[in-house]
Amino acid sequence: MSNALAIAHVTQALALLLASNVGPEFDEAVKVEPHKPPTEPPDHPTLNVFLYQVTPNTSMRNNDLPTRALDGTLVKRPAAALDLHYLITAYGDETALVGQRLIGSVVRTLHDIPILPKDVIEETAQLPHLADSDLAQAAQRVRFTPTVMDIDETSKLWGMLYQTPYSLSVVYQATLVLIDGREKPVPAKPVERPDVRVLPFGAPGAPVPPGAGPKVEQPSTSPAPTGAEVSAADEPAPGRAAVKKTAKAPAKTVAKAPARPRRATRVSKSAQPEPRKDTEG
View 1 (tube, rainbow, N blue to C red):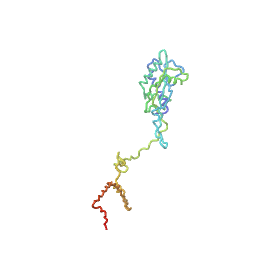
View 2 (view 1 turned 135 degrees about the vertical axis):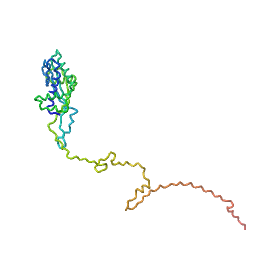
View 3 (view 1 turned 120 degrees about the vertical axis):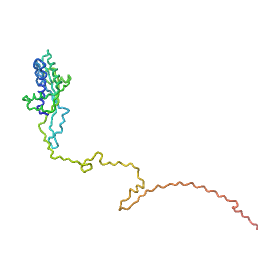
View 4 (view 1 turned 180 degrees about the horizontal axis):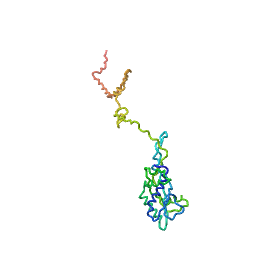
């Protein structure tokens, strides 16, 4: 965490880091300037460190939300997470390929030292315009990583630099710069008296052990009650007239046997009456 001078402090520290590691490889001094490329290229070895864009860090931009309580009290100090994008341009005698040699030294230096050293930050803080910066106390160190840009993106970048001729350059991204807000949160009240209670399971106010909650009754899957069970379950409460419900048994159907045919009665001849004879008078 640091104040609003962190952006300028990182730019100045990057220029000092390059000046300390690139210059010894050349017979003459290398000038490192923390501003945009000039409209007229210089003849002596020169490096320009130009901060052309500042973007919010996508992974940390919402890390400090919410910062206030429901009543508006500041709970956490807000911090803006930023990424810094630098265009590093090299100038020098083209016959001796000074620009290419400078770019090679820049790439090697930032590959060997990708994290901004603390001693470089402290040395840069001695400048009058960075005396109030607290970047050295930040817990998060700034890391430099190269950025890949195609021809189209490079053309657009140099198109923003009005009347500035193109020169050999590299692009680096500085991550992560955190800028704190000015308002400080109200410190929480200290604990006056610790309240620790030990209760056995089952006591009032004790936590319920796992699996000891109220059991949920499952729907019954037993067969339907018979008539006798219905009569026993429907017995009236005491003091009321007893109404006995009896389930009627289904009537039985009896199949009747077919009637026997009657035998024909044979009349004997002896039983037949004889015809009456007339008596002669």
